[in-house]
Image (cartoon, rainbow, N blue to C red):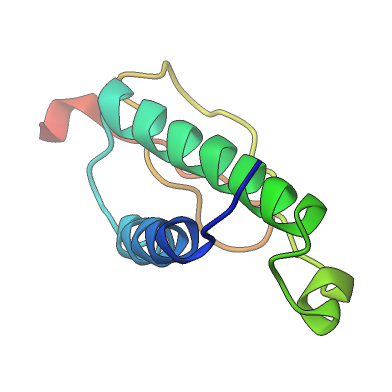
Length: 96
């Protein structure tokens, strides 16, 4: 149960900023992929719990979220960030 939504919302803003910066990150390691996945999963959970606790506006509750899925193009330790709509980028491990 969420009694005070402010810390949750502040953390969601921090996570959103972090994910926004990672969008343009050129070099991804296995740790980067883990951090993005972790932040995305915990943020989605927090949003769901805020909605269930009625701690967001009805307008936000009705808001949709656009999600893109990108197929992995390399091993997790050498994969780069996906670019474009549905495209993939292969990270060249020789550049590391």
